[in-house]
Length: 472
Image 1 (spheres, helix red, strand yellow):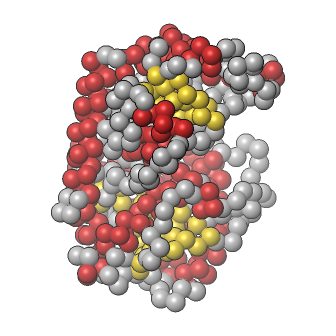
Image 2 (cartoon, helix red, strand yellow; image 1 turned 180 degrees about the vertical axis):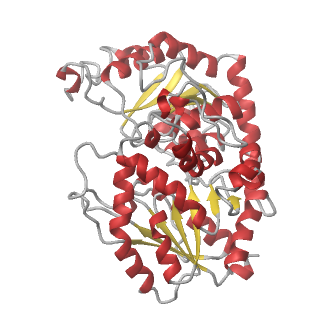
Image 3 (spheres, one colour; image 1 turned 60 degrees about the horizontal axis):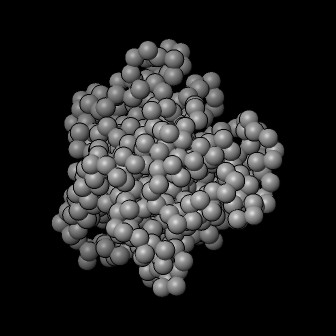
């Protein structure tokens, strides 16, 4: 297969945002390294911030993968203070369509296929114009995919807001969706981002196939439904290709790294890693409760901590000064002194993949972004699910109820502050108790399953080969 794909050339459109660029670049690297495909990543950028590729701490296959930063687009005349993220992303891609078309037209050799992420479905006419194959890459679960493509049907069948429904939302052949767990665009049917989401659900079935950042053993029931359920197939009658897990590789840590040195001194599976991703922000009240919960648990932890969002708190929380022991002012006074023997605070950012891959890590308290979840599962690390936005509530439910590698608070973190006693309970259950060990064992099994799927002859490898065979 590798030799037969050696002359293929694929363009991949990446919508704005680090969380969207990373899985696209990882996909491009895999196409290049394992199938000898030449890949051009077309990155939609904005003038408001530096291109994400400049901040991308991710190796790129030098010979076969090229990242082209498209000229920045300006949507300031189309949005206002209340415009939601999904709307902004769709508008950015829509405004970038002329430069996307120009970039493809300017290629020395026309690509054999155009892959787009699910925010880039408006690029469908460009693929048709150049008469090239067209695929949607959904860097999320099969369950999220099923919800997305079935949403236009729900839009016709259900009256009123989804969050006000008394019954679960039925997705044929799949796990039902509780009203409180719908993805963000479905929270308010009167908002433009809902219209954009329904539009996306209608456009996805017009492509030649769907690539999923999942694998057969992780979601067998939902993948089978997408392939064989008659009702669901009447909505999305195109091939489904689970090609995951696509995740960032582990880069060797510096021997003098403070993080690595600290982790090397800890017992295996004894440390909780706490991080809410690049966009995960907590209120000052919630940060205080999280700090007390970690302290009360008496478990070892690494916490990537960020200043709080403004909420129902005094502006004093936002002072950037520290207390006498160096504790940031938005954490409980003396927190660093009291936890200095068990905890390590990391400001703003940490090398997540390297940390999760360290044998000392026994659990991950996370916002449940799918990139992070794959990095955790494929490191054999169970999760405390703390969903904040987007499709993270779906991810949390899936990991807790379907996969069995996560626990979550009894309350919804976006609706109510999770108290310190609850946090203490969750941390202890994951690190100390048999429940946590059982989830660790399951995560390790899935790690092996993922490796098998990606290996030569595995299910994900075969899916990729099938796509390339169709393109070629």
